[in-house]
Length: 367
Image (cartoon, rainbow, N blue to C red):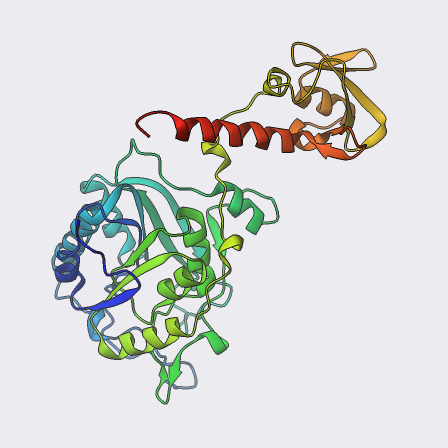
């Protein structure tokens, strides 16, 4: 098996460099390709000061057809190097994202979401001839529709105050100390905020995964990947960008490993409450306390139901009735009293059964 050049920046045209990487080798790709803005004139503010716009050579293409050909070539290589369950994020503006999306579908990527990055501090439309362009679009797609891809739903909810993460992300442009500058101003005209990459990487990868960025620039994806204990590979043409990106990443201290562990509850085996009875961890007739309240108790029935004050049901339905709420997770609501008088969540018992399940799986022949 070929050795991947993880945690390194590879210099060159991404199409050529991607061709040197083995098939099915990376878990996640984040791509911030040229936007093909087609700017023909300098932009000025009302006070006649020049706007630092995207007019770099790497953003210039001879025609839409030339841009489409370039896009198809690098996306084809990206699909080849992605693992079967891998996903790709591509960011762009109205100038290019629709063309990119069409080519993604032509190449049989399966689009999972389009994310709207809403900029809290967008650049105004100085001439007042159009709406202020206050967002960019990210397309998230998987290589193979039938595969189980990584999506850390619960981690994103935690980032969002226990609310399901929406597809509109309110994040400011890169400003202040985060913006990399030199004596001439911005080093890179389209440097992305670390907050954006933090959310992308948290959403769709696991610690230890390999994240590839074919348009590495000043290395935002690599910096955040290192911070979150992921491996990374960057591809970049410009020597100056590479130098700055390497210095930036070298200065990053990864988070402690124990803080980046992600538990995907959807992939954990489902453990019914009745399993606790079958394993002898709880007994019929034993009392459970609602939210540790000694005044509200339920009795465990032999069939796994629990009863309280003439009402009977599952740990979930009875919790809902007693709390008078629309939804309740019984694993979080009910507690038992141990032999030494300590109140313990029944979810701790579920973890015990899950651990035993994993041990049994590992002990099976052929694993």
